[in-house]
Length: 577
Ligand SMILES: [Zn+2]
Image (tube, rainbow, N blue to C red; front, side, top):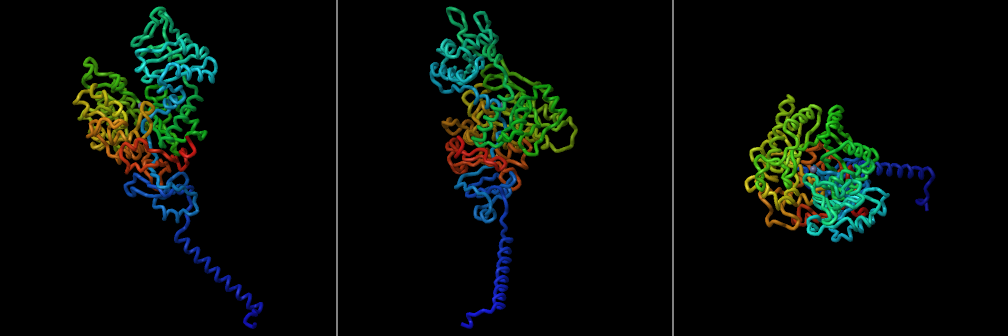
């Protein structure tokens, strides 16, 4: 019993001892945690196959994000200890790529295509009339109904007339453009507004189809005759432009894109972008090329200087010029005549002197210039203009600072290829252009010049920077279609076997660099974008398949699970369709 009895003063001694013990325990616990302190982050992604595009650490399993930036890259177990208190996201083995960048696209046109009535793959006139009727039902009287996508090639032997269409849509002008934009189908209201009647004359390079007996227009307008009506369609309002761009931006993040270089920006688009960013409604980062053909816009921006966004949401620091047209319609400017049209060498749309003048002024004002050049003559003329502008600004700064760009660089004379790397000029190229154009491209330029066409391998090996892009909506914006085209030079059906001019294929690594590191370089953002490494913006594309392991055709069906921009999930396949 004695031993069981503890006097009050010895009780207090026991308490003091207990207190001491617990104090030591607390100290030792804190010593342990200071060896492995729990770090704070906004989000910790783990259990992933992270393809970083960072040569120093090519692969990882986990990424920690804080304040919109990547703060740590490593393996899942280590990361879990470091970021034990952080909001986590288990990616269940999915592949994570640096946020993909499309270095040349047109959000506004993509948006327009999403707003207008989509008639692609609708097989009969009756069904198209029904769609137009439905759309008119929700439109206000007089509002234009614009559609696109009926197949003017397939229907050429038996074009529809405006009778059924006009009866179904009496109160709205309707204008339905064909799949390849060579023909349009208008209703009576649209023809009336445009003054296209019995007495209207065919324009140059255009034809108004007419009823054989009455001479009245049938509603089908070919080539330039379409403009008789299309010029009466009111141009977009600011609200419509914003709506279209938002739809397009959503389509981009849905396809895994985190940044887009917008390849021609009008004053209305500048305003729309600014407002969308300010309102927090632009999920995508945009690098804008101002329309260099708009003299007022050019002068305004040369005066005010580039707008470089410290938040990397919207940067405006380049001008877009057009040196020529397209190869398909023989508008591309060639050094020698077209192989299948010996009477023409194509068309130069901006003379060399004008490209030189704008480039010199742009460089002095801190702007980049991006010039569309398809034919070998156009490419040579732009290279000449750029070379002279760089020399004439008498600036001793290294060449790589200017980063002048040629958009497409599609047909190059062999002796011009090394000039890109030598002058620090960026060749901004589109893999799917090759696979779309391959059925007819060689007819246009012949067997010799085709060797310098869509010549990615030659351009890459010359040491030039080569960002990749789609030029959407002319081509699909899906960057995995571009990746597939870059590494196979085949169409999605696998034709031709072995690839078209397979010696110009890129490797998967090179193609992915084109959509990440190289595209970031082309917009002066290589310090902030293009790879998954500490300090960079937390722009990530999460895909279900391991792109580094699957056979090429499976790249076409890669499924985007999530898209993150600045650490925010801007697209989640689980909740957003
Ligand atoms: Zn374009």
